[in-house]
Length: 457
Image (cartoon, rainbow, N blue to C red; front, side, top):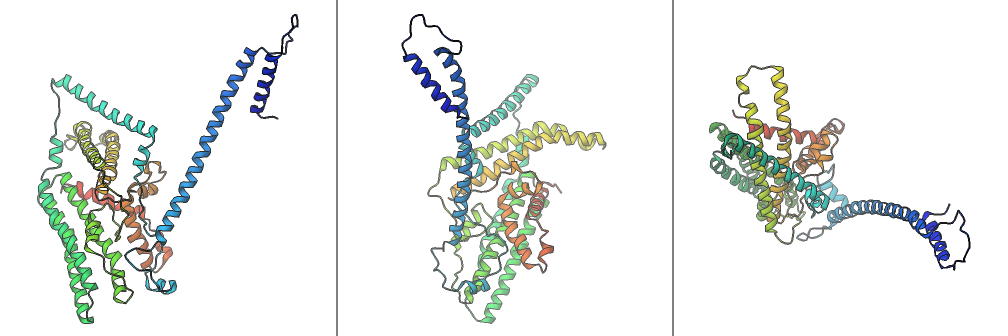
């Protein structure tokens, strides 16, 4: 069978020849001959349908080719970055076999930092996704305006109360004052302990330095473990101020461990004559502020700082905080305010769960967008930190394990590198340790932090 396009072209040619042929007077028209108008009428829909089909095929082919090309380029970029030697170090002339003997065994992939945007920033470049974002923002604004209008009609005034916000962030100066010694301890103790271990000296003096460094690290761990918990419990810090201390406590502990875990093996090899130098203090100071928990001496950097992007992300984070307080004050406080005074019943439990479902979903989305996107991207932009992959497409997850792997990539990378892989290396039986799952550890770590930050006693 001939293609439809060839039939159309032949039909157009025949129609043109019939129009150019001189008509004879009195010549009858046969029933199977079509008039030019009818020919155009039948040809128009067929041509339009064929054009749409070809456009759809073109779009599908372009999407498939773009996806495969992007995957190949990402893989090639990661391999090139792993194979490229650092500029501040000479290329090692030691044979690969001896290098494998001196280095610690690696049982998995090592975290590679590359310049890339956050997933939502990439999606915002698509016009249709921006439309969905604007619709979501418009829906939130309509919800706020309708609630305020109802309050104005019922009460005769606007109910713009910020009591919940003021209560949640109460005693915030005390939390910030407590954070200062925590940060100074993290800034000075791990780096000073590493310098004691890396200092070239006699064996007896080096052993004394190792003992002193271990004592400093023990004191540092004690300060970070006890001080914030003592202040939060002793002074009864409100929920938001308590969460600030708890999250900073966990963050500083994880950063300290990552710094020592990445630098101590290299420092010990440097004492053995491999020529690996101790990291600089500036790189450690940069690591304490950059939005990652995996230490590297250098990170990919962006060429400049977009201050309008920083201001936009901070404004969105502040808007999320205000909207979260609005949701809790309007949807949760009226329902749960007098719950402790009522007798327990299955009906009350089911109703409370149903009442908390919608606010809980809103809070989950707001916390994700405010912290993992806005807050981390703002600090990454100010520090020119290039790798912005703080999360993946967790909204497409079909299991809880995949969800906990993708919703917080920053914590998952730390757990995968230092808990899962190191656990496999230290265990005597790899098969028994293979049941560990970094997604489960990520869930436990996040839940522990939230529970410790939200409890009142």
